[in-house]
Length: 283
Image (cartoon, rainbow, N blue to C red; front, top):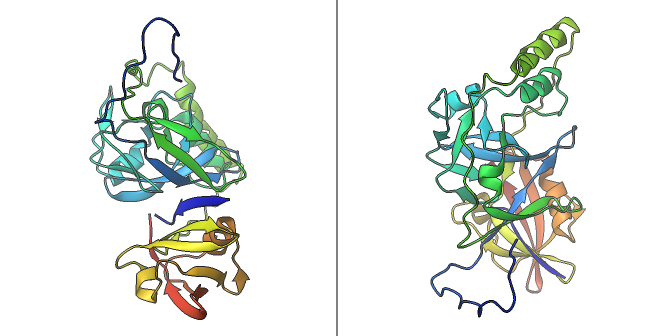
């Protein structure tokens, strides 16, 4: 088994006409492995930067028509707020290297998120939702035995346009639920406890091959490059924990924050090397 990682409906009618030749100018599909987390409420959450600010915690919701971000996040990320329609991002980057071109979002304090955040139900503060307007652009592979989702571009495919969003005040009074839950939480003495620990950045890519984790790329000027990692290094241990799969490596790095120093033992040819990495700021 060989898997690659980054630490960075078609239908046809037969007999009507011959298949058209593939457009030689169409770019091949690109795949991105997106780290995700299941919240306590079992929502799929990814992290993203908006206009270079963040990262922010966004849940994937195929039932949502668009990307939604809270007013507070819009202010932090310098996203213009409009009473109707969608606000444009200068840049929208999802952790895992996926940059969404020409991304737009609705700036709105969704009552669902306000309620969840008010009571700390998700176990992490949620800042918005990624919906149809982005998700429809990709083939997405969900595998809850893995720690990553696979997003694959669909060259030449343009999803059906989004129906214009109505004014957010037409929710039948539901928009009042979020502030109400916040008030009830305060009266009940419920205080959400969101532990925010910036994830440490290593700066290498790897693959699983023959029950081993092999470095395939070292990002220039990254903590891994500064520590002396080289392409072809076999990662054997991190913090004296044996590394045999990508999941082993992910677990070993999972709670390591910015500035943490980790000792990696790697096999380089016939030699065993010990490399110390000081984790930097990632996404």
